[in-house]
Length: 244
Image (cartoon, rainbow, N blue to C red; front, side):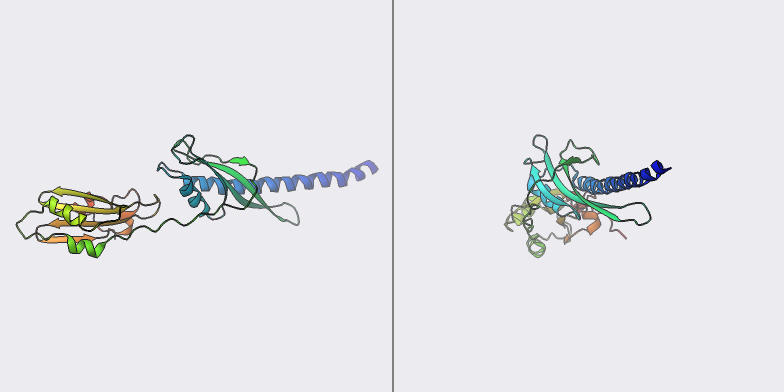
């Protein structure tokens, strides 16, 4: 009996250590899930520089960027981003205590990456988190200027693609603004587009020069989201119906 009494505190201590270890594991799993979600946000086939990837990662809540390896997502093995995240869990027992951990993981960003790929556990590099300058402001799309420059075609006439192209050239557009012009059945459609980030709504202007009407407009935001097809010259010629 005496031996059992002496072993009891040791058993309690061992059990207590097991609880703490289990809570640490759960908190680490929570930190890993934050890193996995960051990898999901960064996943994509669009070519990006290390600076673009790092800036995107640093803007994710709960993520600190500590190291970037690689120059471009499409060069070699892509970009490795070492991120630091935190996770928490509660110990079990009569008096549960919150356990908070900070852990580092490597997230790979490459066309070869798998969706929700598991981040790798790594040692945290020394030094503060990396900081990134804000991206340059996109050029303003010249709505009023485009509206004023485009030709007007009388009823019964035909829009001239060459004249529309001359009107665009006279605007002296910023090189970052991509233009498309397409003629179809006596009408000419125009697209002015600023490259987006692949996640948010794109900036674009549409115009249609047709007999009796020259129109310039910005498609609804839902149509300007990636994959929605609102920022296309086809949508300028034959507009999609507005969402309700």
